[in-house]
Length: 57
Image (cartoon, rainbow, N blue to C red; front, side, top):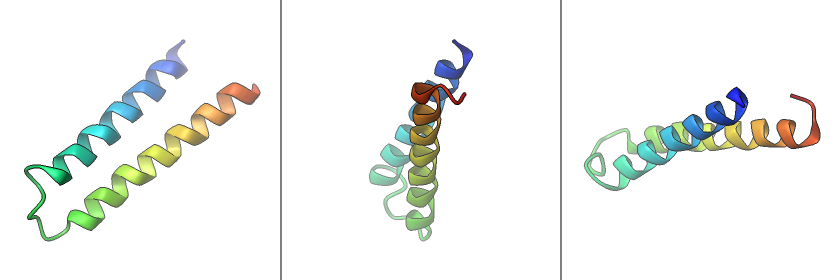
């Protein structure tokens, strides 16, 4: 159960970061780096989901 909570927290965090880059942080100089952080979080969440569904975690 805790692994699903971690998965949900990662998704929530990445979504919030991505939403901020299309809103208030749109004019930031390093917006591409911030978006890359969100994409890495999505990749980590997918990896965690895959491990959980295949029974490896």
